[in-house]
Length: 367
Image 1 (tube, rainbow, N blue to C red):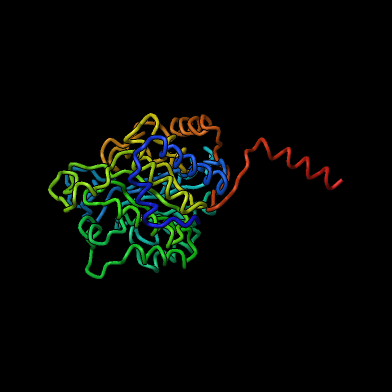
Image 2: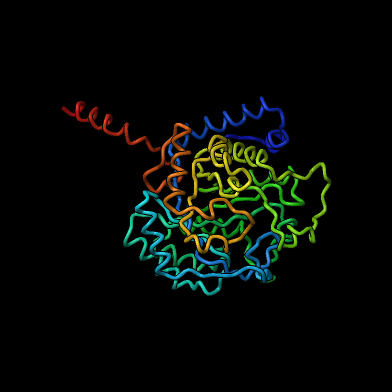
């Protein structure tokens, strides 16, 4: 891990000169190439439920949003998506949902067990704050990774936008440490440009990634949702305007690049949220700024509009096949290639075209 101080990070986050920013992105891309190679790993996303018991001030799935039609996928629908992921050549499926109490530990366990038995896929879960015994049950069933974004390391801001379900609710930073002790690859992440979020807070986020030694790090723009207190303007966390971090794509690219430099072998996605604010180039520019993962959507199209964490989400009408072809085209246009395995942290994978040449060389050495 490169040692950058908070002052170094703040300098990078405040940088606006195009030439200096290009130097930053090129440095991050070089670190990415050295530590995780040119493979871009595809994680098939399955948004299994839009029900949520939480009242997060920024999320369209919040329980108080009565305008949202809710859904919960069936076991058979989820398993069909997993089989489709394998057919499309993905190495991982990501089961994501709001904090839905009707997704019982035993029901999730059964699905994880089936996927691990019937496919070669890695299984990533992103189901919110769950009890340690549930996390252990799923890990024992074969779940490989768990994503739990902490959204901001600023405790005061976090409490303002993310009220706990109980006074003794779990601390997400502590839960990420627990996930690692259970043997999961642990993923965290943040939104960029939350109202009330400072440049200094973003620098602290990067230092938190490093301190937690995260295996996966998701970074995307804050996108306001009109049906939430934060998005409607009803909630306005106080901050000096000169210190407010913007939620534009350039700020996200700077965060991606600095995070790649500080956490060189982590898996870092170029997110759907980034593609939402720049539908043509967002994912590609994220990949050029240090990212090495994309997450094509496998959720049945009839459900995608209903999984409304934020509005106008990218790719909600594309079939899984079309999404796959589009993303692979973007990857190849950058001179990179789609990863073939599960893409565990720090994996250095070579293009398939190189492997036969290496095999031939090995045979010749053994002769």
